[in-house]
Length: 227
Image (cartoon, rainbow, N blue to C red; front, side):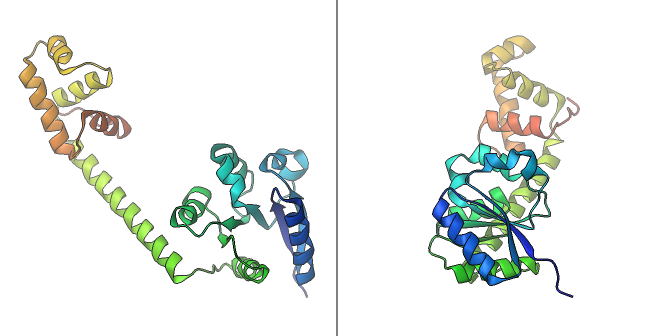
């Protein structure tokens, strides 16, 4: 028995593009166009919210024009909905934006053919992905870099738990906007002592400025140790 057709949604500003894509995909067979829209905002209608596609094909430029708004709109699709960005420039930063920022299942470049899009659709619906060696290396390098960053942050957090109570106290006063002199006056200690504490904080955390250190301590809720 033949399985259900793939229900596809199209979101693109260009009406001619939408109509052409709708016509072309319906000629392929086993694809049903659920709806086509010109903007993400239309996804907020009651009809769209309750009518989820299997696959959404959207214009990458819509995301670029208003990243904060459009990224929220993309979340109207459940995680089960696969997504393909079309019209993506062949630049590393744009490809990474698709993968990291939008979490797309696939993408096609500005000069891609209809055949390439169809191949992507077929692969994605099988749980696969078409990926060039260049993009594979780019993605691998990015994942490796993120893993190193996470590892460094975890190591720094472990070391930060060795901060003394006085060092954490001084970090909190820095966060209040106090200068070294004002901290010395507040705590009734020498200015040179405050400077030594700040130096020790930066040295332990392997950071280069006091504000980065304060931000890190706050983000990780570093407890105060002994004096």
